[in-house]
Image (cartoon, rainbow, N blue to C red; front, side, top):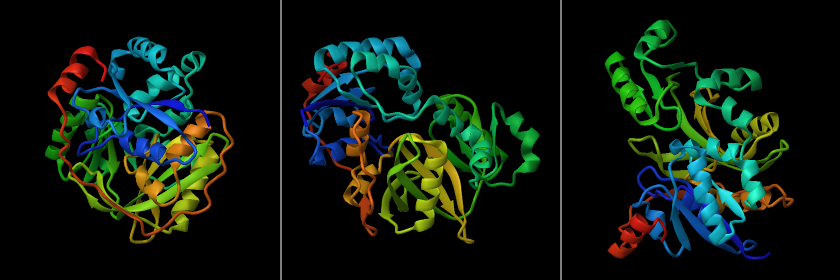
Length: 346
């Protein structure tokens, strides 16, 4: 295969990491792909911008909140210089912009492999009850609200504790009305409205990373259980599981929705061994490298699907593989920070 140029976002490899770096690691591990990696950074201190062994060149890009046009103008400039073959956006907040621009990017010669707008919208946290009913999946009861007074109108349907969730990120458990009010304001200030109030389901947190081909087929799926969770609810450690029920649920959702691209299912397994779907993240998660280590290189498969190749589904993975995240003091030079800050390129 000829050398590819692949552009990726999600370079903020911090305590709540983006998926960009583990996706790049999967691509670098590929025995099929030969790729030059272009990093798309939103912040001057995104660590991935300075990981030169993984990222060949980095460009600053405008925030999705700045609108479609500024982002497309910047991408056109980058594409003229780098000739991008495949683009992999890795943040929920930017996906809508890239999905709306998919045809424009294709006309430029940039391929993506993203969910459709319908798939993206119907799995939103605010739409999860309708999603569960439509596809026959157990989900916790939830209500989207735009004020605490909205919650008061629905309070008879809930018992504390409840989960308070932002439309893109962040989730907190509120044990009383004061905490709910505090978390509502905190999340709304960061991510906007609506806020989703979700029934708190007691059980074990388990997750699945998966890849759908857009035709109802599951190209790959690896389940895991979180073994260490940060105060932000992020997995800081996990272990792959041999779990037919999680695999069956994943295949059912991908088949029924005709899911296109990467996804993460966030699930709760109750004491009665029931699986509740609490969230669908519409892209590969930050722990995707665990799937690579377990035998399913989903980032590689995603790139090949974007290029229109026929990709055979993975048949197996290793259970009992663990990941443990760690902090690492990376040393870089001030002139590199200055270059990214002033020129927008590194």
